[in-house]
Amino acid sequence: MDALSARSQVTGFYDEPSGSVQYVVADMATRKCAIIDPVLDFDERSGATATKNADALLDFVRESGLEVEWILDTHPHADHFSAAHYLRGRTGAPTAIGEKVIDVQKLWKVIYNWPEFSADGSQWDRLFADGATFSVGGLPARVLFSPGHTLASITYVIGDAAFIHDTLFMPDSGTARTDFPGGSAERLWRSIEDILALPDETRLFVGHDYQPGGREARWESTVAEQKASNIHVAGGKTEADFVALRQARDRTLPMPRLILHALQVNMNGGRLPEPESNGRRYLKFPLDCL
Image (cartoon, rainbow, N blue to C red; front, top):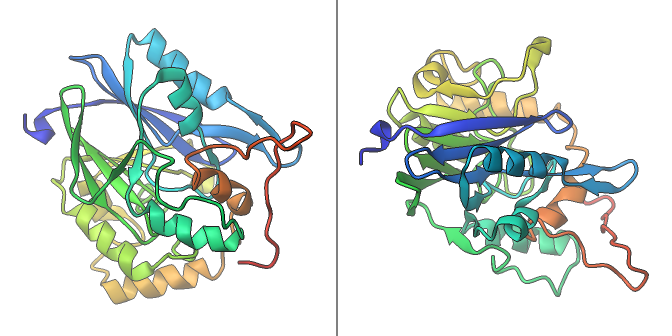
């Protein structure tokens, strides 16, 4: 089946505290689906975790008569905890992420001084290489390596839809930052070029929306719309223009408030730290590291 003729049903779920968008992408012919970038709720003020977001995804899957075939993360997120491990336990579906997550693990293992951590990607059931193919029901799916925001970011092209995580945002919001450890504006530009080389009618689904100007949250565009009006790449901008713009913008941005909380969970496949002798779990918080 040709990818663009294989239309997927995509439902987005917006997490307002983090501005993140979670997705259920389904092949309605087979009733199989994948969950992409699920959020585990976390309140840093109280230290409370919850599964409200993930349970809403499961409720939708059940009410729609779907079966979860994959739980997919696009990269180790810096602004929320991944619910991949929780959802694997609830559904039995395999988890997956890009194979370059190992590079992220090696980098952050040092930052967290976590010598016993296994930086080998074994926390997921499958590590996808660039160009890898798989399926969601009868929908053809493939992986594009899309670094720049992180060392490990990937795009999932599933049927006629591409899940582009933190590369491009909606056209009025531009593109993702590149100043995290391992980030690169030059590499992000090349990743964006690869995404915009997809057919113009390809539907693009972003990983975040920060509602510029107070508008309603939005998360779907097309390749044609992004090429025509994305404020960071349209208008004949060159790679040099983009890199200068992106680096200047990044210098004005504070670190995400949850980056040091989230990476130790997300580089571990969404697993919370093991309980200590008193039965409580503790996050490790390095000082003066960024």
